[in-house]
Length: 142
Image 1 (cartoon, rainbow, N blue to C red):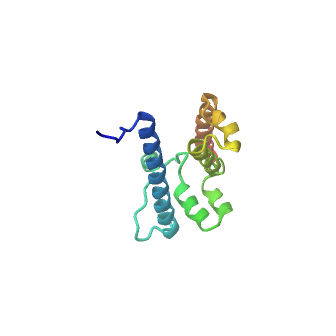
Image 2: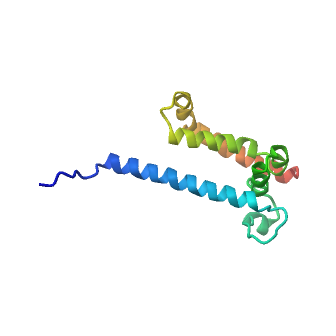
């Protein structure tokens, strides 16, 4: 008689969720090491992604400058990093908050934030802020 029980759908989802967290953590560490070691401002030996929107139009997209800013952040220069992209001041804390809400939604501090982070008005506000930043940075040359 077989005493092994088959995985239930909830067990499979938990296992897939745990795997996704580990894969995301590994990719984050690899990306951080890459951006720490390579300075996108110098354009030396390692390849960096170029912004296709900027290459085609000459205008900056909302994310232009994030690679340079990330390099500077990893080297402990937050004010210099902000000079490359002011949206970074909103993007990093928000990204961390979203990750925490997905990873530990039942944590006492996160329980208050989780419903607000996933709310449709929050998403709409972020889209509008991104579009506003896109326009402002190109009109004002920021």
